[in-house]
Image (cartoon, rainbow, N blue to C red; front, side, top):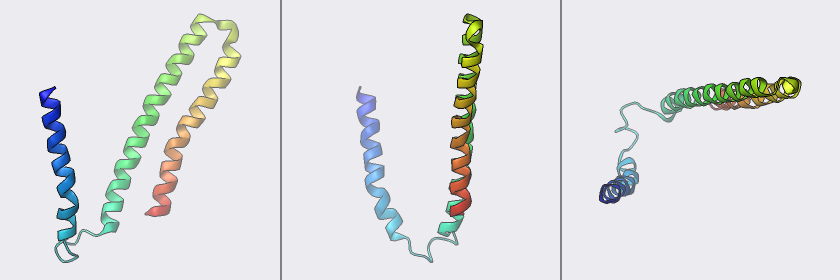
Amino acid sequence: MRKLVGFLGVMMAVLALAPAVFAAQGPAAAGGNSAATWAIITSGFAMAIASGLCGIGQGIASMGASQGFARNPAASGVIQNMLILALVLIESLALYTFLIIFVKV
């Protein structure tokens, strides 16, 4: 518990000082790092996270459908339709992320 309180205290201090540090840097002190450069870098991270989470979600959905097929083969049509719907909705996360990145960058 003490470690958690100490960690939270350090994080609060860092977060409290961050606005002052970024406000102290002017355009000349930025070293050529513009907002457009950071937008490209963060969009890459956003797409990587979205794709990774989509892969995990699709794997879990496929696992559940496979278990459903094994437990009740008679309901395979319903399970297959639900699996396809779930995969489409999961994949839309990556497509929406890509669309937002394409529009912003």
